[in-house]
Image 1 (cartoon, rainbow, N blue to C red):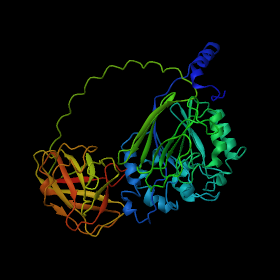
Image 2: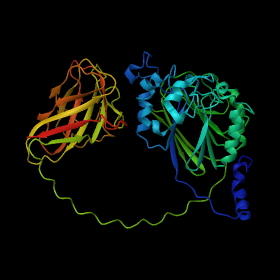
Image 3: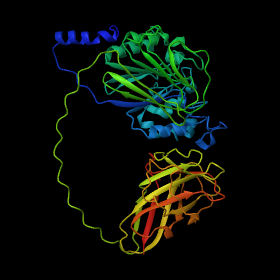
Image 4: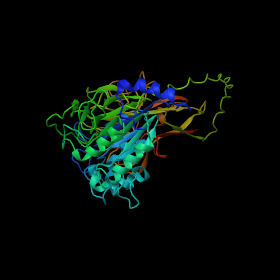
Length: 510
């Protein structure tokens, strides 16, 4: 049954008639799902603004938009094409995209864009990096491939390839169009979302792409609700429209352009019909809460004050309410407290992982980077960068401490002169929050470094002797800080998805 022929105001009557005429089990509603989306993401590592992955205030902000992703809890991330500039080789993916948005690679559903290649034999870097998630062909490129679908909660989500020549066409009767017809027929969901790279409608770069009109019309005719795209390096939200692009607030399909993943901005030309909101000054991600018969959108800026939020209903009707949850079981009795651990023997080695770590940046004084997969230290006028680590030392008891060493791993980039390690005994040194600490509210560290290192090679673990800073059991904060000659260096944090190399404090008793 097609879901597009009924206007929204008629849906309650239609639902009542169908319920009276139909017998059978009632559909079960799923829990709400939350996804994030953006495209046009990672800078070319050769770009003058790449800056070791840190970017500038107006370009190469992929690390900062990925920090937004890491602070959320998303069921899926839609990467809306042009994921890696300028040429999406595997090497460029590994050097730019992977250290930033690669932190949510497991949750990401990728969309192929023109910078990944536009011919049928292109996209090798994209296909290799994403593997099975890229849905490429058996030759490892995008020819006749890179489109797929899946379900998240109550929603059916479709990813299409708008490199039409590579995909075998986007017109009526093309392989991709036929696949989409069959997919929509096989998944008559109440709510449907589609994503591809080139916008059907846009006031920005390249304008509106009419070659996607057959796809747009088919989705509308089959009852789809929302289309997400990139390519134009801006954010633009359109009002609901019909299959020909005419305004239809009662029974329309909405398009949102989210080309704000971090690479750089492009300008607007004449405003396209039905455009409601436009911005090309703010990088960020789009957060979507997907309900059983509606959705909420919220643009989350990585910096700045621009926001856009709202809600809309799906075109497929209102599903039955979920059954009431069962009563919770009674809580189990609390276990007896464990006996205190025996004191360690002389010469015992105790290894502790960090319980909290975060970088603070002078050039982003109110920003928090607590969930970033990396820690950074750097020295510079107005752009000082330091990292705070907290450890919970236990099991020492009354034993003396023979030595204490802080170990940090440098994955990719070394330095000619490494940072120092500072103690922290001020108010707040034992209570700062990993997801709340900023440059402005960081607790004051010591003014003199307890330990320092010189040159650091990439792919090595660095070790500092911090014995004077460890007095025994309890919470201790160590600050990786700049010295007058410190060169910038990036360490692996406790939030890294790598299985090794997280920060460690190694204590040996006397």
